[in-house]
Length: 113
Length: 410
Image (cartoon, rainbow over all chains, first blue to last red):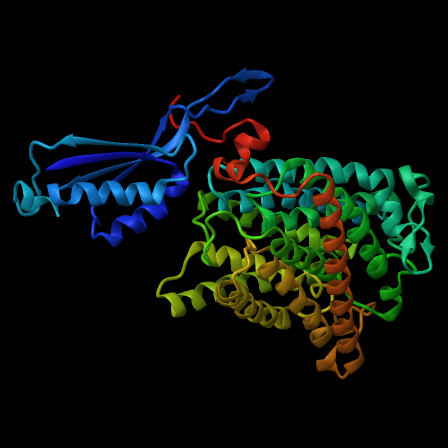
């Protein structure tokens, strides 16, 4: 079991969701986040005071998958979020020790999908 | 001179200001995405500043000044020359000429602001500014002169437009459609509305529009009299009917009534009753309100989705379509028993008035469309109308104004 964490551009959420649904990955958690990477933030000005390079808004997806789904999920997110510019985002894959479905108390691989 | 009339028109002037800022600004501001809300507030605010100045410098003189061949006012009243405390009996015999001027100023302000609904979320700020000044000068001012100015050629034909169905709503609504077509869709728009970021703002804005519209419509009587009272009641009745009808249509069509639907319906009702409110009785106003909900719902929820143009906040679907219906309805339901200075419509045996109102729509649609195309081409060539795609994606607040409406983390 793996946990896939993807940080993407907010306006790419729809196309990433569509690409994930195409490969039957329908369960995910989505949050608004702020961050900075190689893309520079924009200067903000309030009554003449400049605040250089603020953090940028991004969307974070947390998706728990079984081993067979790891590569297809990475490909789908990349397909949906790729433009080729800095700021497209990143995907992190980490080992997942356990998964419990609260409603049925199922555990492990059965609980993921 | 009458102090009651003067007090009412001054008060109405402030009410119409409230329609643009904060009324329309929050109505539109709630409908856009959170990254663009400040751009809408800024556009409304700057229009209030810029057109207030345009109006006192030369706009009022072009629209209402001494007539030049029925087409435009001359510049004799530029800089408010001769526009003072003495009444101008051609426009309003019982209030100072300056009060009539400032009341009309607020109409000149809100009209270009209505167009924001079509180009929201994708134009450069300098392009918006130049477009607005040119549009106010070359579309609003001439059209106001034709319909309302002494010697205006449409006024001489007997056209009836009590508070601006043609001059304000059809002109801005048609220009909005033309701009939406010329600009193209927003990045990511796919035949269905982009989700509003703050509906409570939108409802607050709609409620302030309703409140301010009493100044717009009943104030257009230019007196505190029976016609103002009729306009007030007709306005409230049509608006209530349209808001309720829209919610019921949604209930039947989609399974649930929505607050956005009720608010949109109410605004459509306000638009439709605008040209008619001083000429029709309240029961016919009720019918005008019910009908406009059906007509605008069709335009906004069915036809727009099929045709796929991105009139982002439905400036055309509500103001263009609703204003057209209101202008035609004035030709159907107007009666001299309500306002002796008006005329009878189709239902009261006067086919001619109905035809005049139809002609009025054709002229206004043609003029506004052609002029908007020309102004768009000029601004697009000089500055470029649309923001770069990457700026559109980040949002206009950060890229055009260097500020953000909301903090995510302090």
